[in-house]
Length: 282
Image (tube, rainbow, N blue to C red; front, side):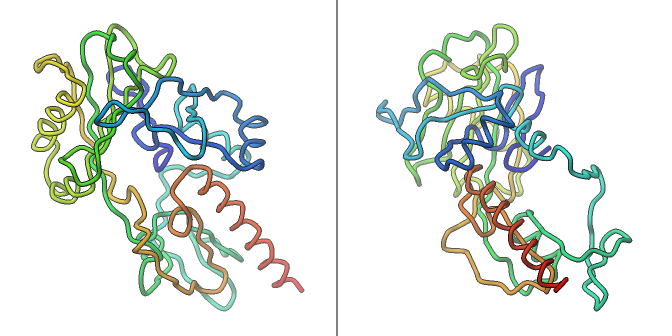
């Protein structure tokens, strides 16, 4: 599965290309992790800023899923009728219901990013605007660097880099005598290079990353680039949009973009759908 919990097999390594970790604050979410997911572990190594100071997280410890963070979505989807490779191009709202893929539904929920939800539901504008993010996957010889820290952050607005994460801090993810990094570009760099091919921006991100971690040049053994078009919702870009009757949306188009908040908002949307169906039946 892709999206926020995207994980892929690259160069034999299991790497998280979406969210790098998640936190848990609410009792409801903690219970879900303990009863359904179970296979999650804390990230022990610290995250450091440009001055080598530890960056703590206000929401508490950082966790990851052993089988890849996309396994979380796999667990949550258990029991649902999941139809892969079945794009929904249009949805029609009629007096008899909502037509979708040849079926008539009583309600429909979109968890897509705001612009895609707006296009699918025929909304006048997106409920949220997003910033994009370019991601570089970098593989290096040796694995001694993973002991330094889990990640390094750059100040906002300072150069091409936003953050660089070392996947070796996740047990069983990296094979052989290698070190793998997930490098996230800054919002400005991502905007400026959004239409550029990976071969044009990968060398820039690799160079900045190597300067940040003090890695000698020439040791990178593989690289790959990815462009998240809807990476993070902009708080200043949220809009109130009226949805057609029977249509609902959930996820970071109306909530914070953390895994926990998106999950909680999905639960909220489910309650909204149930209330709507009860109201329809009465």
